[in-house]
Structure formats: structure tokens, C-alpha cells
Amino acid sequence: MVVSTEQEHPKKALGWAARDSSGVLSPFKFSRRETGEKDVSFKVLYCGICHSDLHMAKNEWGSSTYPLVPGHEIVGVVTEVGSKVEKFKVGDKVGVGCMVGSCHSCDSCANNLENYCPKMILTYGSKYLDGTTTYGGYSDVMVADEHFIVRVPDSLPLDGAAPLLCAGITTYSPLRYFGLDKPGMHVGVVGLGGLGHVAVKFAKAMGVKVTVISTSPNKKEEAIDHLHADSFLVSRDQDQMQAALGTMDGIIDTVSAVHPLLPLIGLLKSHGKLVMVGAPEKPLELPVFPLLMGRKIVGGSCIGGMKETQEMIDFAAKHNITADIEVIPIDYLNTAMERLVKADVRYRFVIDIGNTLKSSS
Image (cartoon, rainbow, N blue to C red; front, side):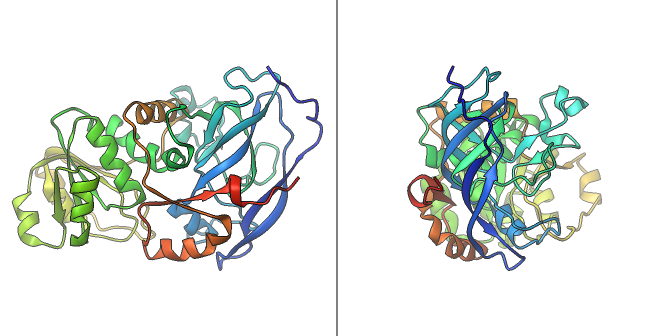
């Protein structure tokens, strides 16, 4: 075990931060805490850009504080471990997803569901246990408690694995929890973006029949030929939707814009489940009669606990699943954000931190 002797000094860090709700990001110098006895420090090599990074940079959810360093799809290589760290060593490939802390004493924590802990600490824009603000992965160095560190299997490329830490677990967890992972089942995936394309890959690897549901007819070829979905429905085409009524065991809805739920509920078999993983800013309209007439369920799901996140990344390695990415240099960040607003990416931007963010040392 390599334990640094320089644990007394906070680490100099360089990142990119939003300073106000314009959402424009620029270089930002700050400090990470010293590596505590249960902490793992790692050099950040890649960080994915999640749609929530955009919402948070622009304070569209009303909870942002500035300066804000986004990024919760963070991967890199361990540089230092605390004296009581048991699972990781210098040189390991690791990642951090959406959370860096929880209470460890509630029912959720006891059941490996730290993601539902009322005191969950988000990777950025949250207050840490010591009162400091958490800063995310658009930065050159990361420090986190080993409990919230994920081991990235050697067979996975780091850049393509980064988005799995948010987009991957966000779709893997509901497929497992709601029992939509049984071979031969029929599952719909609404929206073919960062979340949707990973949902298709996981569901197919589980042996499930997958139908992509989209407003864009031009995504059909991509869905079927590239992602190997079994079928494709244009949600605005009444005839297609009518023909598919009552055919699906479940639907994973990844859309974060306001959209009608009634047509989706109609696609479900009796006892079917519509699971929301996108986060529209305004409430959606929920018609109740169609739920009653088939004992159908509308549910939600938010990332996953640490145990399941590790399971997800191991499953991805076993089935050779990575996100489809466009790797960008850090100084392209604001342009990437503008393109993200227009959904102009297939399907996830990943920042090459290791090669393009100038070192702060």
C-alpha cells in the first residue's frame, strides 16, 4: 500500500466552472481536500457531459450555487490512497459518478441504496461533510471516500466507460429493479439520446426484445442497424402506435422535455410499467383511467447505489458495452454545451481532461 506523506496539504486543482446562470464555463483554480485516511485521490483523465451539467450550470433547477464545477461521469487513475483504504491502490483505473457521500445509517444506506439517502451528497454543487462545496469532474484531480469509488475493469476503455457512471446506472437500475431484464420480455425505450442509447444496449445484453420510441423518424436506421434494437416506433405516427398497443412489458422513458404519457401507457400490456428516468422541468399530465384498466404502474428511478453501480460496470465489461461518444478538448466545452441544447451529439460528449486541461502543478 502506497500512502503519501504529503497528506497535510490540500491539493491544488484546476477545473472549469460556471460563474453565473449564463452557464458559460471558464478556467477556475481551487483546492481539493487532503487525502483522508479513507479517501482515494485520482488523476482525472476523462469526464462525460451529462444533460444535468447543462441544467445546473444555468441554474435551471433553481439549486445551483456558483462557482460551479460540473461533471459526474469521472474516470481516471489512482495517484494516492489513505492509510485505511482497503479496496484500491495506486495505478488502479477508477471512477466517480453522481454522489460522493451519504449518511451510512438510514434504511436506504443499509440496503446499498445510498442514492435514495436523504443526506446523499452530490458530486458537485452540494455541501460536503466538512461544510465545503463539492466540485465535479471538469477538473484535473478528484478526491473521494473509497465507498463512492467504482473500479473500472481493464477491458473497458476509460473514455467510453465514463458516461456509464451516470447514463449507464440510470438505465441499468430500473431494468433490474422493475424486473424488465428477463429474456423474451418486450421493453420500449423512449428517446434515443445519452440515456436512451445506453438503455438499448443494456436491455439487449439482458436478452430483452427492444423497441425504440422516438419523435424523429430519422433515428430509425441508427436504432436498428447500429444499436440493434428490434423495432422502431415513431410516436407521432398514429397508425404505428395503434398497431403496437398492449405489446410491451415495460417502458424506460428517458425524455427530459414535457411530453404526453397517455400514448406510452397505451403501449403497455396489463400490469406493465412505465418508468421515468428523464427529468422534465414542468409536471406532466397523468391520465388515471388507463392505469386502472390494466393495473399499470408509472414509476421513477434515480441512478443506483454503489453496489449496483459496480455490478453495472462489471456487466458492461462482460458484454462489451460502452457509451457512443464524441471526445472533445476542454476548450471546446462551451460549444459542446450549445450543441447539447440542440441535441447535436451522438450520444455523449466526453472531455479529454488528461490531455487538454493544463496541469495546475
